[in-house]
Length: 409
Ligand code: FES
Ligand SMILES: [Fe+2]
Image 1 (cartoon, rainbow, N blue to C red):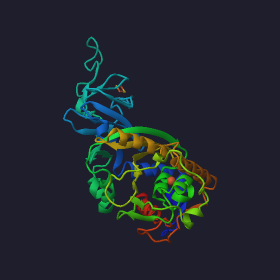
Image 2: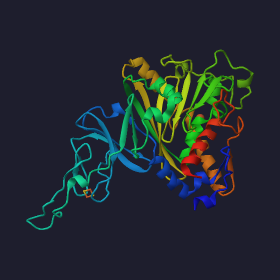
Image 3: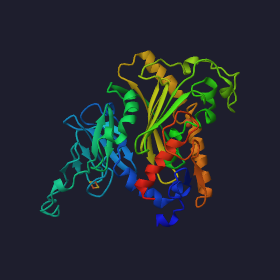
Image 4: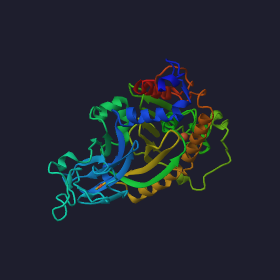
């Protein structure tokens, strides 16, 4: 059925047909082949469940799961779906409990998802109850494969998913380790937003250095990201993950920056601390933005570090959950700095508010002409290679090369 719709030129990933973003059959296939396939999905940070019994509920793809620290001090991730009649076992966003009890008929599971108790299992006054051959061990919560990598929790619905480090490859590992070196993390805060656009658009947006200084007037005006600054875009072997790194140019705006439409040399920040960063991570780059396909963007800009988690909600909508991250040894000044810098990001961030708006408008454009239009990723040509400038959409082409393979289209 999907094949019939295909008008996608076989060798092309530079022209992406609009129906990829709008078609419900495509979306269902994405859930199966990508979100529930051989991929690691971001769950959160290890420190979000610090002690045995601490849990958080979240959604991976469209499946509710529970991330919990069990009594053996290990993190497990299991489906939040009661074996009895499918109800969500755990309804709170987070909490602490010695066991998990389903609200419907009070079936109780241990912190590994093993079914421990079934009320009236032997009936009431000798009447009713479960059949004699009922075994609790046949009805545990489904466990996911889990890996905790330098403080970040990843889960996969497939047991075949390779180890995380192999999954992202050596190039992306360098960018990952730059932020997540194993140093103990802390949560600065959360934002949540719903964006009326296809989930792939936010991955494209975060692989897209081209728009950075053009859309984001704040970046260009205050010098955080300008078109002529040294920028690199790097992919893993498969093309599905990518990282943009950039080095902020010193000195004032030059001719390229001054020619940008949003640039206004007369503007100054009343409180320059809003963007004043201290160097804390390795490397020369002043920002790094990694898209770990398909579920998260790990980004550092100034002293703001974020995990931006993607939760798809159908072809035309996704939830975007921001975790603002710091390190356990941050002093009060650093913590305050991170909070201040977080003003640039999140749903109403001075920079990031722009992205949600353009994603929504792109989706509207696709829906108006779903069967015939194409999104273009032609900057830098048609080839798929790493780039060292902002005028390239090569990493978006790279993602679609992988996407076509995994989606068999
Ligand atoms: S649905 Fe969970 S106990 Fe019945
Ligand atoms: Fe952006």
